[in-house]
Image (cartoon, rainbow, N blue to C red; front, side, top):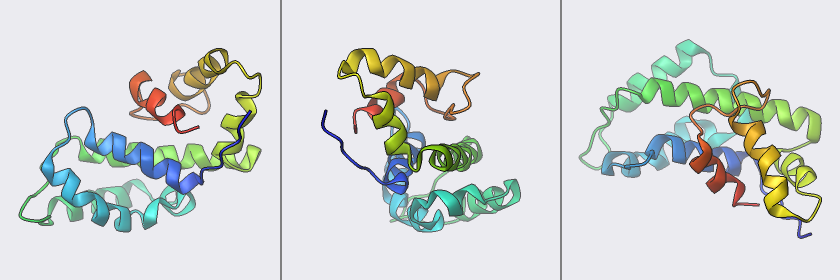
Length: 150
């Protein structure tokens, strides 16, 4: 079994990009991603997890008020997406406190050598509403992309 380590912050960045861009990415989001990354502390899971609802609201206003290469973001779901990113950072902190990292948790589950069989519990852990590791704004397609990193 190949063990590939991916930092928590890189994993949060990947998921956050998927959440922000969605199924139909707009040019404004593409242009805004580098600036949003800075605003979200380079996706440091601990820093992002400390954001309050008020902080997220201020961040939303700041993003919507900026010009990104002549484009603006008018996404009505931006606040929901930013809240999901913050909540996912909190989930990553929870996982890291128990397993040392999200990567260690995933690789721990991927231990049988039967990748298809091992993916099902991970998909459930990250997408089932009752799971303590449920990722917000992450459906099965995004979860599969996320798990393909490992």
